[in-house]
Length: 372
Ligand code: OGA
Ligand code: NI
Picture 1: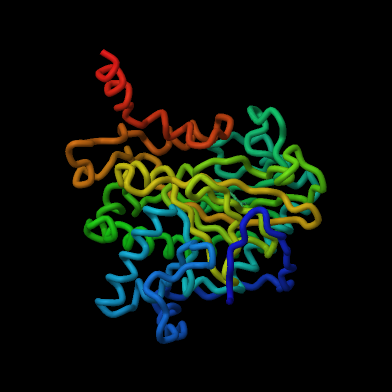
Picture 2: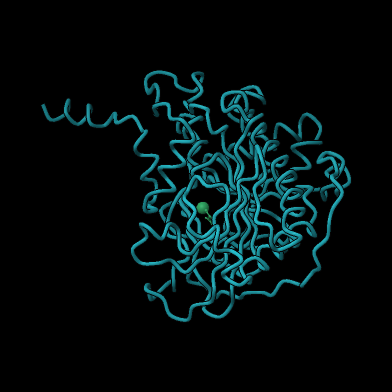
């Protein structure tokens, strides 16, 4: 097959990506690009997935399929969000060359001499450009085997002046991936039985927050964990609504599914989509932010590029009332996204600790009632 997912205990075979020169791309309409993608092969199953079951969502069908194909694809997307919180998206319309150019620009940035990055290295979680090591070195304790660059990309793009080509590529990449994430959000809204624009309206996505992150995990032969090697990023869910991720051909992203860690192996050219905490809140817990982590390869540098879409920073995120039906009612209290993100980014990464703070603690009452 074109793609597969290996269990963690199976052998990992990293591949080297082809080197490509950076390029500048014309801003094409997402729909036009998707229209140009080849038709699906006949007989494709209605629930496409990888060997280990990671769902595969074909964006071309979601956007351009006929009514029957679309409703099937929306249902498939809904199941992907409900059962996994993690899927791959194909025929997404973001040119592969643009992906490579983004990866190359991040790589170039990591290779710059420290003095050219110094002004971004003491930055805090709410500063629009941040370069660092680990997750948050002020609270990490043991350092994680990771370098990162984080750039706020919407409503306004912030970006280091060096390397030279970074701003142009980041602007284009942010715009294209934002369009894709907004399309997915509309289809996810439909999959919850809501109008396509309902989530966007609740989260004020016209003024959405978007951040681009470049991750670099240098090779590490021996790690603290004998079975799995060094940890690049520990288990966490993402603070936003949806995260889009692709990597440089070296595996290491693991996703927790049915209580087990699975190594995610991408279909070439596809993106991973990771459901975040705001999706869990707005859907009143129907779609959960999925736990994932990044392991480090023993021999090769691993890189990933992340484009994360979140609500407007000033939006107070609450469950959509239509989804908060009796007997359960509201699963989450409202929280301003800016406060949520600042809290999640300022503390030790601790699985879903940030989300638990806004969860309505219903079981306490149940326990009290049961024991009395
Ligand atoms: C992240 C993340 C995983 C990876 O940046 O939030 O989960 O594979 N990255 O780099
Ligand atoms: Ni993450």
